[in-house]
Length: 272
Image (cartoon, rainbow, N blue to C red; front, side, top):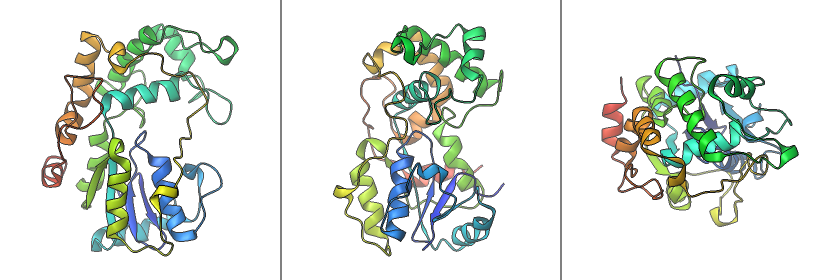
């Protein structure tokens, strides 16, 4: 199984388990900058060098050895499940990707046919019923996760606990898990705990949002998208995320966590 979704600086100062839609572009660029003194020119997800990535064959051995020795500071980042699934919808389903096309080719037409989803287009200013379409997308996301139909679940809306657990189950141990909503505080603690070839002044680091500007803006408060059925589906999909990472299920508009993450609990519950 190895360590899918794992990135590590070439200096091996930091090791990061990517969780999609949780500030991963910014974190990757910080890691890249900390070794090279410059940001990757483009989307850091496309970088084929300058960072060790599990998707690169030559990176397997250094990542495996760093995990085995626990010689690199290992961390990840989480986000409120309500906000994360909404972000996935507006980016991957309603938005146009960097290449000018829809995400995964025929996925949106398939959703239109099977689930009645309408996401508009750049031609009509993305004019569509955001609430109705999102709720239908949520049914689709649940179907992919629960029954793996009509396709395997996508990494952008599968549970954070599932991503995070693969690292633990294969022998890894996290030194920190912090909140997207408290990004500066959490990322600074990581930087304070490591020595990097290039010093990082976090206040001067821009935020990299590779999905921004490619689709419609969210028109309503978070709670407007979640009726009783939608919240039932959210609990079915993300129950473990709410519980382990201390997010507020009862109030979708409260994006902030209700408490701190217990790393020992996370390791115990996600180790199998």
